[in-house]
Image 1 (cartoon, rainbow, N blue to C red):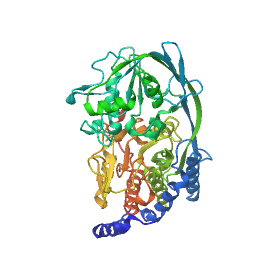
Image 2 (image 1 turned 180 degrees about the horizontal axis):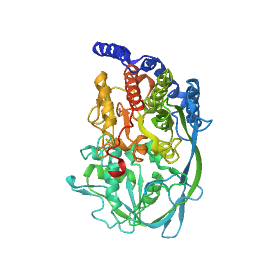
Image 3 (image 1 turned 90 degrees about the horizontal axis):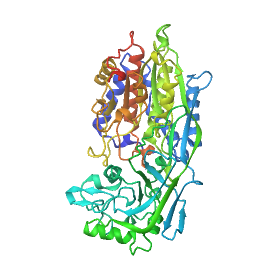
Image 4 (image 1 turned 45 degrees about the vertical axis):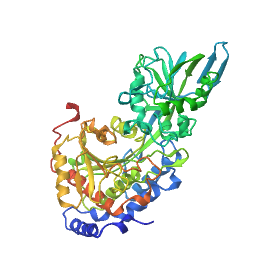
Length: 544
């Protein structure tokens, strides 16, 4: 496997040499145990094709967790949950019951046709039990674009009706370009303004179908990643599911296009013809479909899924301070297969898992262990709702009041590529590392800045804070610690264009850079764990 180090500029090679020398001269021992070869070995296993993307609830993720426990045992780390490295928790999975859910189309003669193809509820969040019946209005793309004097609902009254709309927005004749300019109308981005518009339409429900020019018959074919997230609602056992249910707002669902074809049969229209006319004229073609009614019946079933975090620890050397603990965390799960294509998740987040192993190895090599204890926590359920870390903070293996800080690693192995522009992705170069913080502890941030001054890495805090547009502070496992008033630092090299894509592969990891990143995080953790006084939390989350 070719490493990126072979393509790194000479100037950066010099910086690496300087960095290795400077680390060896520091008073922080153990950092030399962190090396790129080990990082590559760990990531190569965790992100190999045989792991099938480590999706939650699969044997593939179980194998990954078994690998992590085996490595923890080899390092001599203590199991953190009694005699076990595993911390089990339960998820409840609420999904559509295919035997009891259907869409029925009725004619004026009261004839009916039933469809049992999968449907996916976009709003409210997740499947729910309901039955809705009503007349149907074809409403084009279901959008309003004032700058183009276009409004699919302008000439109709949607109140109390069920709207049939196409996905996306007006297209060129061959479907390769969007007629309305601006990213808001492109691809799935058009869902956001579409949903906002339709939610206040006073319709009973909205059914969305893939437009004919897409070449797909269902959203499941067109965007399997979206349907994998919509097909079920997951929540921790014992907690309430996060459902936004507003009775005055219509239910919005993706359905198979053959339902649209059946609704339009006998009207002299077809979805292909209507789309072609709308796209060429840029004028709505909305109308009440005569002689047809539709009934949508959705029933749900709930299953319990057993999940596991992996937790290992090193006991501190000070008789009193060892009661306090510093947590190093990263998620082991990824998104698995989508549309039959494996998403390896090398950077997201095999990189973080590997770094934690190397950091643990560095600490374990010390003749005198840090004053405070250290917890190495590989969580699961991150990709579907940060559930593993939520479960941990609700059922901690060490008292939260004794938890000094959480250092979280998520996607720490990449450098900016040609496709990673500042316009679409925040990415770092060969020496960059994002440090995302809520500034709960000025002292913790100062420790990171002190390490920054000693390394060739450039620590970038520009994505920090709860008000940043990307909301990265709330998008990884550190967030659950922050909500418990535990100060956090979240480390990432950025959101490359392979994020949640099949291209997140091992060969794109820059192991030379990742070695430096892992050493820097180790040094920050070392300083926190060996401080004579516990770091001060001067801006707790609970006071925000």
